[in-house]
Image (cartoon, rainbow, N blue to C red; front, side, top):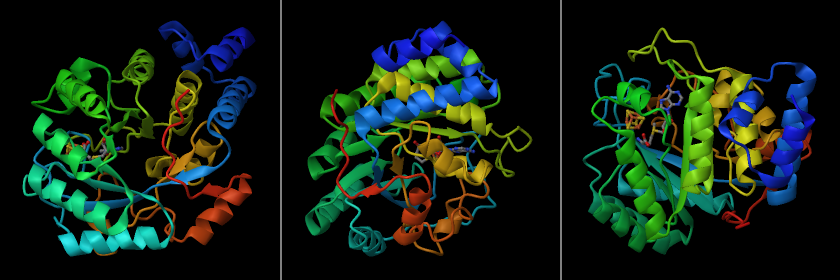
Length: 344
Ligand code: SAM
Ligand code: SF4
């Protein structure tokens, strides 16, 4: 790997498709640690050393879509479905607040019972009762819904583009088009949301070129948050026999995302921990700066099985003392501020 290329990435954040493929191709251990160190240095320079927390509540595992990779897909009849009611969601939000975490993420499958007005009312109530920063991650909705969510007090929206390869996207999400997903992202941005996007690393049919396009798309969209995690095969989906995403490729993708975008908020995802225990801490050492402790109540959490092993990770991760201890190992501390993106 050219030292020059890395230096260019660190100082300008400008990399073309070929440069990115070159970085993703790195296998040699010394070159790999240089890439990771560079991303860590950029993270330190632009967003500091502290880790921001977002408490996540997975409030419904019903979904009307059929994404081939996801355990919540509507065809999965083996899944016990649940919906939390308003009081349960509010109680979980209060629990997050009690831990002094200022941001909550409300995530679900695309559940038609949670209509736009229903979610807007929920946001309004949580905002009024807790004053917290609210992130929604409830999939593709109409402009009117997004506008109502924003007016109700939602601050951020997470909608991963999943893959920048339109054909692969259509194969993996039958009946859906990448252009519609991108249209949603641009509506959300225009409305004033802080917007998150991202991909899965190791999807069957994905190539290094696809990953490079993912990274360029994340930069082009001007996304504020980037969710980058490995694909994990779910036994009750059509992709049951596919190989899981690879930890090193996930970390390389994350490191290049940091080099390209400098000030974005990048979570160390649960999926990274699932494919390799300790993976989350490694992600924090090569560009990530956010952790999302799970506050879905026991009894529901097990049902949010988008991939296997998800609920078994980091037992007690909602215990902040445990998280603090783990972060201490890599010399990082928690910042309890809202952690909006620092504009460059
Ligand atoms: N339904 C909403 C959506 O699709 O945007 C939000 C919930 S969805 C479960 C959240 C994320 O889970 C997706 O963006 C996708 O990247 C991830 N996901 C789904 N199945 C996965 C799998 N098998 N491995 C890794 N990540 C997966
Ligand atoms: Fe539904 Fe989201 Fe899973 Fe697709 S990824 S099946 S939209 S929950």
